[in-house]
Amino acid sequence: MWSATKLWAILSMPTTECVRKAIQRMTVEVFGANEQADQEIPLERFVALATSALRAQGVPDASEASLFFVDEEAIAVLNERFLGKKGPTDVLSFPLDDDPVPSGRFPDAGTAGPGFEEDEGDDPMMLLGDIVICPGVAARNAVDHGVTLDQELSLLVVHGVLHLLGWDHEVDSEAEKMEAREQQLLVQFSKESGSV
Image 1 (cartoon, rainbow, N blue to C red):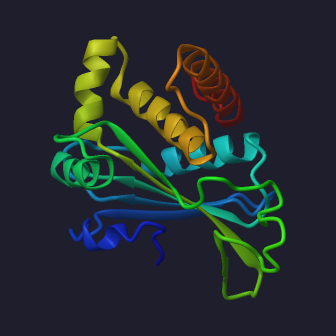
Image 2 (cartoon, rainbow, N blue to C red):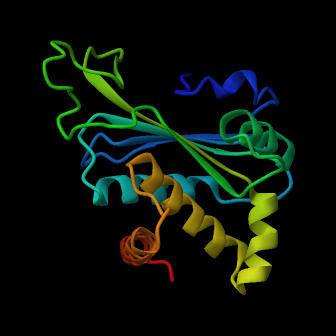
């Protein structure tokens, strides 16, 4: 089992639920792990949502990402370690490569490029990175936002995917574009999955 950011050393609690799902039409894979017990979550649905969002964003075939659901203590450790911020947050994204190019190669690199790893079938895998979500924080935010926990978690999954792919919301114009794309991806997944 891989983790682009070596989160396993920090997330050492036993996995309570683990799902690996590959969409057969495209070899985009999302590894999902529920490492918390605070909230019951439909892990397989969120893995499918992340996969759908990655496909809709046009990630290359043979791409892989991880989606972790953790408790407040675990995300607080990550938040402080990687962002220098104290306390828990709702979602963190750890892109493996800050500046990927569509082909997965860096010009003049002469290799498959950063983010690629040979898998068992000798096909190069583009490792996109990790998304870490805290359902405990999301539950409080859902109340504040007037939505269900499922709606809040769905938004966080898509938000995390976009961050993996380089989207940001540091300025208002970027935030508006990102929020609009999040809603488009959620509507698309809703249509694909037949959910509301």
